[in-house]
Length: 282
Ligand SMILES: Cc1cc2nc3c(=O)[nH]c(=O)nc-3n(C[C@H](O)[C@H](O)[C@H](O)COP(=O)(O)OP(=O)(O)OC[C@H]3O[C@@H](n4cnc5c(N)ncnc54)[C@H](O)[C@@H]3O)c2cc1C
Ligand code: FES
Image (tube, rainbow, N blue to C red; front, side, top):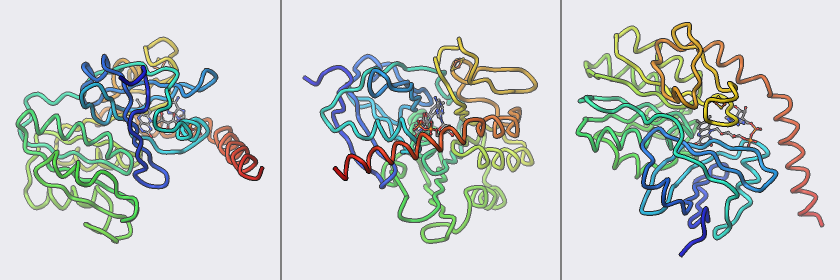
């Protein structure tokens, strides 16, 4: 039997994106679409929130992008290695009940998070259009899994190298203009993408759920670090979300807050690369 929090399966989806399946039977049994875990890769490690992409038996799969020091350290743990902590499921599940026709829009890595939402809607009997956007063909991930989780999959690439040529918002607008009627739209991905999906759906008066991923520390509503403004009120994404009514989110404030630690994160990323290069040299 695997050890607690052992990485039982590890797969590189692209050079920057990794999928790990972790032995965590209790979380695997409870987790619902839209919920997340917080893990640590080492006793001195930062707490890393990652959304549950899927569960199978005793395994919880998360998909992460190597964007900085902690996710690069996480990626250094080999298959068979163990995580220090793996806590969850945290946050509220994505609401899917009562939806008959939905569009789920994922941007880049957000497709790994859009996947369980599309699957939950589909399993609940909804007809689902899944729109997945990527910069270019080489970094398209989880295409087969997404195709299985929906009725119609539309892959978009910014550079037109695969599928629809243009942004996810362009494809969504095309579908809406052609007369598609959605009860609800779900948008998961970069803040700017979610902001523009919401701007579009507001014009069509379609309720829209977005998944907010501000910086989190404790993940239990104690530190206040993950606050977002929703309809003029302060909410904590870790316990009140991460999903919110996208038409009520103050995106500009969230985008500005997300940039707070940019310089510090850049330095840590560069130091991490230097440490790795040092090891490789000798
Ligand atoms: C609820 C939630 C779910 C998430 N799900 C996923 C997922 O499924 N896959 C994935 O790749 N990423 C996910 N993220 C983002 C992921 O947690 C960060 O990319 C990661 O913590 C970056 O750490 P780092 O040290 O490698 O990068 P850093 O260099 O420290 O930061 C890079 C960027 O990551 C973000 N970030 C940094 N620390 C945190 C933190 N403690 N909490 C949230 N964001 C942070 C910041 O926006 C920052 O600009 C999620 C975040 C939240 C809040
Ligand atoms: S992460 Fe601390 S309150 Fe949400």
